[in-house]
Length: 414
Ligand code: FAD
Image (cartoon, rainbow, N blue to C red; front, side):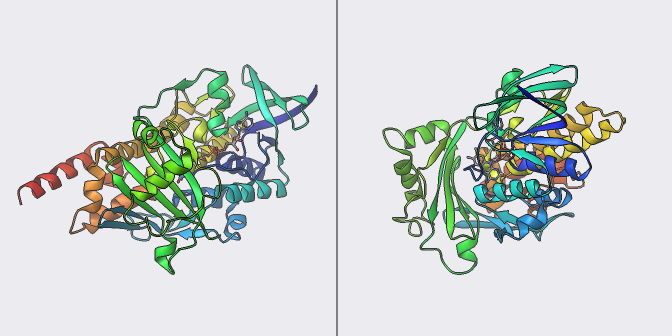
């Protein structure tokens, strides 16, 4: 068996792995990335939020992505019957990027991976991690390459960015049930032949079909649009009972008064994919010689498009903390990694929960709009969930619930 020796082994070349890889390489660390599939590969997670731009810029991946002319995402629209609420990232509380992209992930992730390779990083496609063993912080990983050959990779540290592959959570028994209720989704892409001219055609939208059921519409600059339905697992299973996923997704689109005409008769570009009970959690996010980043650690819910942002936030942070430790500076992984990540995850967990209770929808659609409240919520939706000057971050535990209660009382008393 051949042997390789690196400082850091990164498992998975999604956004989390690529950001880590690029940052560490730029700082002189010897790394290797192993990726199970051949890119481009299909993956869900197409609506980004502005916070990711900080990470792509810092990892020096921004320019290569910017050249691709992906559709710019300047905000997001939420629709509930006749009611519309549009968030504009340029009207948010505090500092931060005003825009991001909405992207077909196959192309987006491939662009990043190719840029990583162009920088001289050793990224090996079709190489699957099978086993990992640790001796103290040092690890030995067995990888099977595309020809079926096995090799040993010896590393001082592993960043596990394997997404739903969840390599280390599986091998080290770190999985734990998510605290969120079980939700599922069916999605595909269509050729958007009836796309209207101008903003209406390109605006990313979330159409609420029932309090807990919503449809995403994510137009891409290549003329295709991603469509997905999300809801409680029981609802999604009932929708797809005795039907194929295509019929189930078509039936969900029929429930949208807003989009029924635009997507009538459009063909799916691939068999719609069902993702059942997609939320994930782990017992711990790091250990001796490794850190878990992105979906390999925690995934909440697609409703506020936080997945890629957490993937790049944790990927960047794990890389920085490894670098610090490698220079002989002590790192408190519990405080600097887990507690930091958990603060942001905690804010979004509240927003996800309050979305599905309907409380957040009460705030979104209340008329007249309160611009002060809106800009603070907008900052959260942009991913700036560590800015404790924002009361909608600092007091996330009860501010939405309390405000929705007052608005409901006000409505009842009219
Ligand atoms: P990934 O992008 O999944 O990359 C992991 C990589 O690891 C893969 O390429 C995989 O092949 C590789 N791998 C796996 N196992 C192994 C192995 N054994 N050896 C080597 N390599 C391996 N997020 C958003 O930001 N916006 C959205 O709109 C959004 N919508 C979503 C909708 C749904 C229904 C769901 C379920 C999720 C959604 N997400 C969204 C979340 C998003 O998909 C993820 O958070 C994001 O892709 C995580 O990135 P990552 O780099 O951690 O993992």
